Image (cartoon, rainbow over all chains, first blue to last red; front, side, top):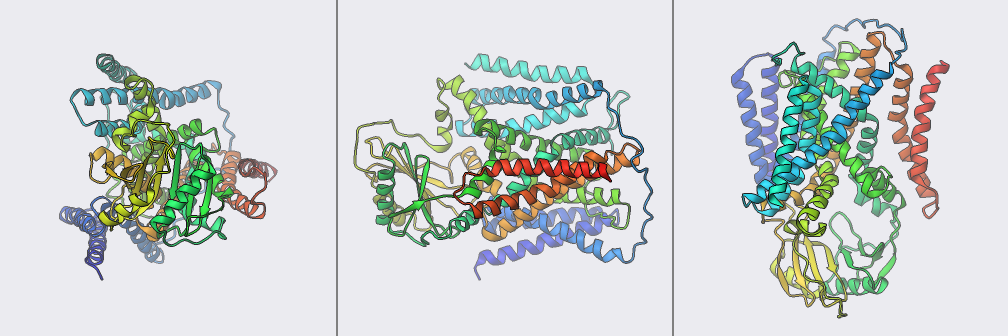
Length: 193
Length: 425
């Protein structure tokens, strides 16, 4: 067996130990130290996995393992506890009491929301992404890195703006923030070109 | 730990949950189909090999055989601007040459066998990449679904202030709504590394073209290819004067001598058969997430340098890692199986999310039975129609039957059928 294999075994064990500690700590709603130790073990597992599978690939493999082990732990305890837990009475729900009639104003509002989080947020994110690229070019960041930030940033900013638009209830605040972002981006683009 | 805004607003968690629902309702149906096709596409190499399983099995090719492969590929399509040579790898024991729009299988000596025909794979790729829409538009649409899936992840995390403390809670003996909610939340949290990276990489693949288009117009007089040069390297100046085919054999011998631990898996000959031609040998760094490092050679097979995907700027490395991260092709069969499990989990998360929505509506006396049935029709119909298209492609591999039409018509019919059946009951 190669050294990498034993690193992988150690990484797997650390992953599992970290998850078990977190499960125990969170189940009892306490044990701050145990929570911290659980996270530390998970981080250590990722470091060991980086040694086992390569600096970026190893971390990805470690994360995959956590994503597989945690649901397995949940499934195991759910299966084990099922016999002990009293069966909850099914709450009777009203069976199709009414068919909802939706007013056209509600449909219009939904279309408006779709346009806001879709094309509008997308255009804002697009302009902000180009603006960020321009700023990075101005401060002499390597072009490959500036491109990566632009390409990676576009969907992240788009999604963030969409969530922000849906979550924030203060319309004026939303308009100020987003228009400032667009204004600054366009300004930077004009200055840089 | 609910955070409230300064005015008389709802708590942040409640608003985030509302945003999460808006996203979910808007995109679940199509997202489910993208996830389904993505889950199957994890095994794309195996499916392609299986679809045309009579072709010559090639475990290794000598440098001279690859040279013959290049010569034969160019002879098949002399006008092509790029000749792509797919070499056999541990996963794919086949060799193919792509010249223009045509692809041919090649034997171990580099002799062209038959044209490659992957009817079902092509259908599946078109579904996952473009939803069978015109390619440039379809890719954008799919990318937008990636953006919204990422948005759902963000709003989902914001909607659950005690997401960590509840990270292992699964109240199996409680009501259907609680069970569905627990499963939805637990799977979402623990598989979030998968669906966050996958949604983002999918979105980046589609949307980076838009950014590059704009940057090309702003900076490089409309030339989009120049935008990507810092990442993929610069192509030499074109020289259309005819020349003998590039010396691929010498390039491969150089690779074997200087980089024996980095196996080449793909070769691109740019502008083949011209004086300006040059060769890029894509070689796998098996312990990295990058797709491949590109080793560049001129037409005579002289080494010019590497592009830097493996050890260049971090931006180059990050961008080159998108493909393997998205398709789970960085750890052989175990990682592929894990990706299939995560794909199924994501489909379950989407389905459970919709179930929660319908249960909540029902408990409030606002049941939507037709819509619920239609959703069930889609959940069952999409995999069934995918199977049906596979069967049809096996029965009529060269037929002109449109698998896309069968799939979409079938899914639509099943959704409507389920909804109508409810009314009849």
